[in-house]
Amino acid sequence: MDILLISRCPPFPLYRGDRLIPYHLARELSSRLHLIDLLAFYDSPSDIAEVPRYERIFRSVKLIREPHRPTLDYLRRARNPNARFPRTAEQSWSPEMWNAIQMTLQSKNYDVVHAFGGVQVYEYLPLIRQIPNVIVPYESYSLWLERALEKETGIVQRWFKNIEYRMASQYESWMFDGYDRTVMLAEPDAHALKALNPRVPVVIIPNGVDMDYFGSTGYEPPDPVLMFIGNYDYQPNLDAALRLVRTIFPQIKAAVPQARLYVVGGNPPPELCAYASDSVEITGRVPDTRPYFEFSMIFISPLRMGAGIKNKVLEAMAMETPVVATPLSCDGIPVVNGQHVILGHTDEELVNGVFQLLRDPRLRLRLRRYGKQLVEQNFTWQRVASQYEDLYNQVIRERHERARVGLT
Image 1 (spheres, rainbow, N blue to C red):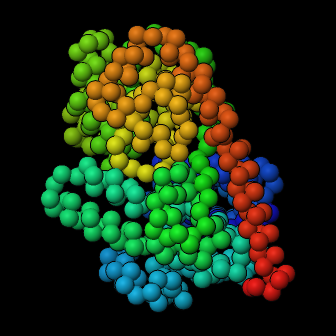
Image 2 (cartoon, one colour; image 1 turned 30 degrees about the vertical axis):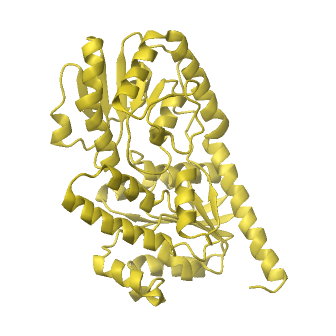
Image 3 (cartoon, rainbow, N blue to C red; image 1 turned 90 degrees about the horizontal axis):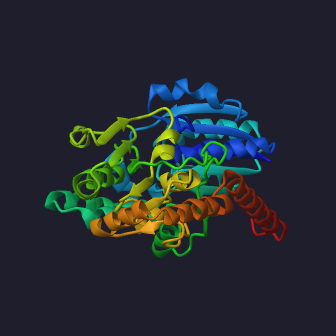
């Protein structure tokens, strides 16, 4: 199959969750002899330096600088239905990407076009409308903002976030019209999108985990070490980490003096770094997260905002690190409380879940065993790639059938 991938971001580096899909999906599809051309936005010179790492996955690679999208343009498109989908390169947010897509389509015949992103890539539908296509917006941004609004206490901040929420909801009510399929990663996001636009054909295909990379060694850590992981320029991760170091871990430390906490991941701001101590290590970005999963007795995820599926939870389960988490942390993952993870909404429930696991090695073993089994059965990239192959073939068949009966 010849596939054109138009992506909101390049596949590398892999420290951001949104880059996992274009990299791992393309890697798996190319191993099945599909031919993939990549057109992707980038926002840092370091992204260009990574290109040699994945050129072997793609037949061709072209990175284009992420454009500035003025607020007034967002408003204009929201208010004027005729301006929502540009007709020329000059009307698009990125004439360079528009022209690159146009030239690529003129030079090759594609079986399917896969657009990865939401507002960053939706506008190219007029160029790809005649080809079977899918769009993967990664998450419902309106759901993300709705959850953020629930936790926002500042009056001014709530006012601005509410405006942004209304704008995102308006966009999601029409942005995916015309695409053959819109793919969401988790049921809550799919439900939110369908509520805004019942016309849009939505399917759910989750993220995957590289089980060869995140494979457990069978080591059982003897010490009460906890960990959380995230990229802390992403507000939900920062909120969860601050909640952890301010209110959750102090309660655990008071009852278990030898307890330690790793807060792993890039871009920790000063307000988070201020909590570093002998028992709390703020690591910053690390080259390999696996040793932290392996040497931690418990992975704790106190997320209370955000949307989409959380790969950090899948990776912990794949590494057989027992998980204590909020239900939101497990969106899109069919966990059973007490079998795959320990769930808790409040600080008290999360703390009690940690105490429960610290006291009960048999419960830890159960979570290790069944958590990994759940990931192996449902969330490997091989399985995810097969779901996308099935989806591609389905939209191709539908196009052929419509052409046969004269509906196109």
